[in-house]
Length: 49
Ligand SMILES: [Zn+2]
Image (tube, rainbow, N blue to C red):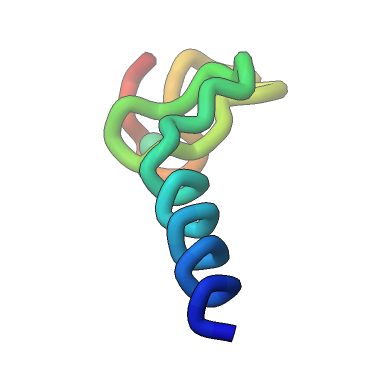
């Protein structure tokens, strides 16, 4: 199980450390996905886009 645990740890870390570029536009301040907004500001933190 030692080897298995090591592999899992590497996979988890690579997942955490890989920046997720999913094509969504996100707020620069809080990372909220800016989708379907009625005005050009983040609905989560109020940051102007
Ligand atoms: Zn925000």
